[in-house]
Structures are given as C-alpha cells and as structure tokens.
Image 1: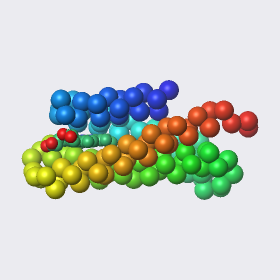
Image 2: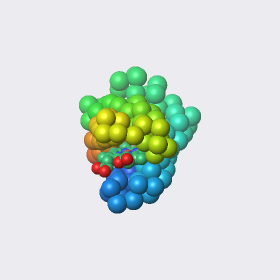
Image 3: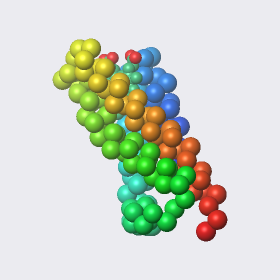
Length: 125
Ligand code: HEM
C-alpha cells in the first residue's frame, strides 16, 4: 500500500512537471523519500538485501528487485539535478535535459519495478 501510494504520488508529480514546477518538486520529493524510507524499513524488518542476494526468489521477483534498485540508485542524481534546477544553480537547456533524461529513466525503472512487485504479493511461500 505504501509502495502504491508512493508510485501514484510520483506519477502525480510527473503529470504537473510543466504546469506547476513547485508541485512537481514537492510531489516528486515526497514520493522519492517515501520509496527510500520503504526500502530502509524493509531492510530493518525483513533483511531485504540478504533475501535479494540469496537468489532464492523467482525470476519475476528478481526483476522487481533489479528494476527497483536501479530506480533507487537514479533517485539520488535525480534529486541533485532537480534541486540544482529548482534553486537556479544550473540554468540552461543542458542541465534541464540531463535532469529530464536521468529522472525519466528512474521513472521507467520504477514503473517496471512496480509492475513486477505484484509477483511478490502472489508468491506461494
Ligand atoms: C522521478 C522523478 C522525476 C521525474 C520523472 C521528473 C521529470 C521532469 C521532466 C520531464 C521535466 C521537464 C518538464 C518540461 O518538459 O518542461 C522536469 C522539470 C523539472 N524538474 Fe523534475 N522530475 C522528477 C523529479 C524531480 C525532483 C525530485 C526535483 C527537485 C528536487 C525536480 C525538479 C525539476 C525542476 C525544477 C524542473 C523544471 C526545469 C525547468 O524547466 O527549468 N524534478 N522534471
């Protein structure tokens, strides 16, 4: 449920990227921070990293972990590049293009990770 809320918030942030810059930043940051908090919580409560590294999950479940990890890694440059734009430290088409490319790739990975998450919900064990 938390993952779904975070993903919907990310989509909401994406949908206002042109019309409402500040809302884009606020919604995207809220979604990204929720995702990071979720991973930390899963790690503390369920040793998520050890489970992933044990490679005992099904291929679909491993794809969920792969895509979610890639999204998580890209969140950090997304935040950095986004804040540089927002705070006016990096104006210009190149900085904007870099943010767009990195952030959109993160969103694609997050979408794939979200889709494959359902393989974990319906696992037999
Ligand atoms: C995965 C999450 C994100 C995605 C997919 C994303 C995507 C985008 C896209 C496609 C644009 C270009 C909008 C246009 O065509 O005009 C944009 C603009 C922008 N984004 Fe993000 N973004 C994300 C997260 C963030 C975050 C976390 C921040 C700030 C910390 C941020 C700050 C900005 C700013 C300031 C602009 C306006 C740039 C300008 O035109 O001057 N974004 N974003």
